[in-house]
Image 1 (cartoon, rainbow, N blue to C red):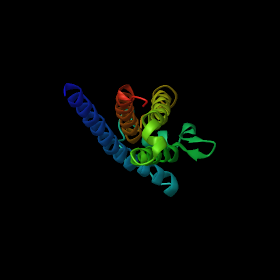
Image 2 (cartoon, rainbow, N blue to C red; image 1 turned 180 degrees about the horizontal axis):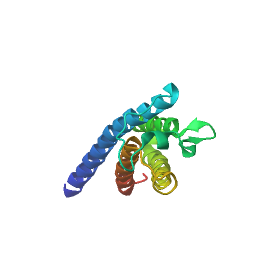
Image 3 (cartoon, rainbow, N blue to C red; image 1 turned 90 degrees about the vertical axis):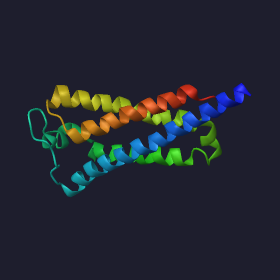
Length: 156
């Protein structure tokens, strides 16, 4: 009986972490969607222009693209792929078995890239974009949720 209660609590906690991931990803999609729109429309960001904050400098820097592809588009794509994997996880047999690890791997890559982007803003550009920092913070939260889910994951 006690083992069943522990399993139910573990299942509930995993479900809550998965649902929290959806919330974090929804916010991340809004931000990366906005940043992607700015690139497509060649528009200026609504930004706090004070002290070290300068969205224009960050969003139009050499580091804002990889081989002509805006980083904002890559962030949006990763966020959408993560949502798709989370949605399919309970429905697709291979994702039922390995989805937690696959999602963790994707978000680990996004997290490490986010750390690099914070470094770029701090050390190379010497300006910060609050939109970018917010997205990077959301990816950090998502990384924590995914790491926790991975720590609870058992390969059946």
